Structures are given as structure tokens and as C-alpha cells.
Length: 174
Image (cartoon, rainbow, N blue to C red; front, side, top):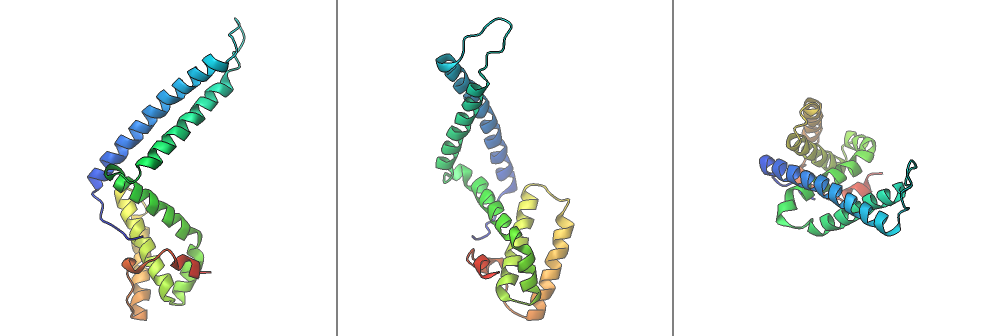
């Protein structure tokens, strides 16, 4: 995966619209599916007693989630979802790297070139996502980590950049 430049205002606008649309759609679809299931299979209400239709309402929510997931999956390659889908994939990749981060840092301390490239990509991608999501609280710690990595790279005197990253490199780190 390669890092691409993202327009922050466009990303935020599209993300907010998507989330608003998902919440509204989930609400309407859940109510519709729940009401339809209760009308078709629900118990007749008895005065003073609960209807026992909770499971039909829950099934309505699950069906709405499944339908929205399918629609979103089908739309993920559309231009209006490009930035959102890219950031989502980037966050998934960051999680994969984070699970191996201790081993990657050990390998980087031993100046293994692939580990340095992975860390370079990881830190650059974290910075991009932090800035897109306005997560400036941990940005100073990230900047320190990036400076430490830059010193390691300088000591090794080799070509290391986030552009050299390939997902297959994660398999080579223990």
C-alpha cells in the first residue's frame, strides 16, 4: 500500500455525510425490518403483559446492519468513497503492523533494512491519519519516534522511505 495525499476538508465532509447517512439508514431500516417481522411473526399483544417481540426487533437490527454492510461493500470503489476507504484500509494495515511492532522495533534496532522501511511507513501513515482525524494529542510522541527512526536510518546510511514499503515485508519479521 502506498501513501497518498488526502484533502482533509473533503475527507471530513464525506466521512461526516457517510456516518450521518449510515445512522439514519440504520435507524429507518431497523424499524422497518423490526415492524415487518413483528407483523409477520410476532405475538399478539395482551393488555398488561410484554409482547415478547424483542428477538424480532433484534433480528431487524441485524438485517439492517447486513444490508448496509453489503451496500457499503459494493460502493467502496466509488469515487466519493475513495478517501474514506483508503483511510479505512490504512488503519487496518496499521493494526497489522502494531501487532508486530515490538518485533519490528527489535529488528530495526539491529538495523535490518526491512524493519526500518516498515517503521518509516508506519510512522508516516500514523501521522497522516492523526492529522486527518485531528488527533494532535499523541502527535508529539509520534514526532519523537520519527526522530529516533531518522537517527537510526542516518546511522545505517541507506535508502529508507515509506514509498519502499510492501505488505509482504511484514511476513519477514518474526
